[in-house]
Amino acid sequence: MRLRARPIGSLKGRARPPGDKSISHRALIMGALARGRTEVEGLLEADDVLCTAAAARQFGAIVEKTGESAWRVEGAGGFKQPGETIECGNSGTAARLLIGAASGYKLSARFDGDKSLRKRPMNRVIAPLSQMGARFDAPQSKLPLIVHGGGLKGIVYRSPVSSAQVKSAVLLAGLQAEGETVLIEPERSRDHTERMLKVFGAHCDQVEIDGALHPRVRPSTLTGARVYVPADPSSAAFLIAAALITKNSEVCVEDVLVNPLRLGFFETLLEMGAKLRYEERRDPIGEPIANIIASTSDLIGVAPPPRRAPSMIDEFPILAVTAAFAQGETRVVGAAELRVKESDRITLMVDGLKACGVDAEELPDGLIVRGNGRKSVRGGATIRTMGDHRVAMSFLVLGLAAKEPVIVDEAEMINTSFPGFARCMAALGADISEVV
Image (cartoon, rainbow, N blue to C red; front, side, top):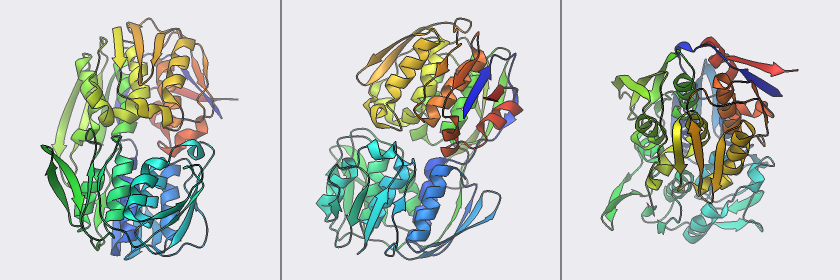
């Protein structure tokens, strides 16, 4: 399926994006690991998360939809031997977190994914989990692979990358390991796993090493809990960016997760001169939530520090598009992780921006975008997305503010993270339609 975005007059109104994908995955996995009932409100019902729901069933949990974005998980106090391959679709989060959780139990589980996920590196979780005692049949250190779990021992693991997926895999395995498990990373990645482990009653805290605090878990039995899933800031980013770069626009994005470790994109927007503010801040679930109001802005190019990369890793594609409408150079570095996401997002974004008439350049761990203001982007291209949902949504946003329409291919993959994206945007005034 191909989608076309046409230039528009303005965006106005209020919108609530779907539930946060990171929290949705974790709620289902921890609910399946726990004893008793877990009630989840606001679950993201996207393809990636539904793969995790199916996996939880295969590992022995009862997982049922009970209403609009409402789900119930009846856990059995741990994972059971699955009868079939665990299919993770396009989701690296599902694969890596489930592999970590499964490693703690005496079972053998085969994991697989789609052609994109099969290309993504799994050694980053295989290495620490093997140190803990798990065994793997993984000749290429990629999917498909088989994990043989059980008999783990806790470790202190210094991760070479700042990755919430790696951290989460190790901490989930540590729940069933002898002794304590500590994860040290170069820069702090998103901390939803640590926060949610506490909600489920795990022995999870922090320990100081080399002058910094790092997460630690001890053997724990999880207990079912109630989980509320706020709107995903990575999805909200598209609506907010669209309001900033289109003329005469103001949009209120409601109920957004504003965890400090997820706000790198919004911090960068403020440095660019974005008219952006937070309202109705609240914290009902151990995760901060707010409404975000964004309006048309004259932006300038910036160079965010490399240490900020982990807090905005999923927003780099839409940041690159936003930078195309800024005045001056935006240089983003410290994001080599983008090379091994659903696609090589650095190459795809630079190629697509160039096709739309934007001066853009690849760097080994990032990119440079040289913008010339809000009225300067030509558009008028058909973008190759390689099935990457965030690349597709980013260029559809570009098409709303460019001089000429933009078409993206393989747009059906948007359902992996933001089902109803075109409909949500249309309610604000966007012109996005299928190309027949």
